[in-house]
Length: 52
Image (cartoon, rainbow, N blue to C red; front, side, top):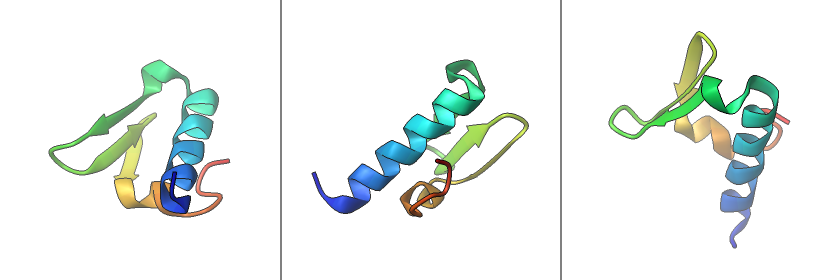
């Protein structure tokens, strides 16, 4: 597994654990990770420590 994949998976895991699976989704058409009442471009999942 490359480093970027590991970072993205850890950030997504932390996001789901903190917000809840029912509050997190990926919108592939808009390249957005949606959580709570907001969201961000999926690329933020590649930022070390984005959520976790």
